[in-house]
Image (tube, rainbow, N blue to C red; front, side, top):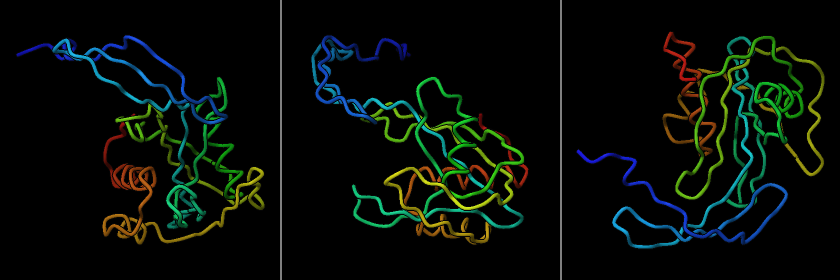
Length: 186
């Protein structure tokens, strides 16, 4: 059997196409394992966190308009990592900003790549046992509605395809496995 490393693509040349405040877009000329060449467009992202907040038998979600898909989505609280920020601290900050809840206990459930076909964005997923601590304090330009639902009901919504946000689907299923005695992934 051939070594997987021998099939890895190698970047020959990299050009930055766009450098924004959240992402950077690069165009790479790559050498493929058979010696031929191709191009890859890559979105670079600093990384993010997502938090599954549990309050008793409820889950705290946020509903917000997502411009790229043109609709409101129901999501677990999430946000991008600041430069050199620890994922745990980012999770606590984002949870507080988006929901007004504080984490009493934070458990890392795992990590996932959002779209590895074109992006290096990695999300650290946490489960948080939470308590209310005031009103949400979203970032400027961020408009979120806090929603409390039954955890069991939201798992059913995920399984039936009603929840469309990938990190939310993954986070809820990871939390459900963990809470029902499954192993932690991270």
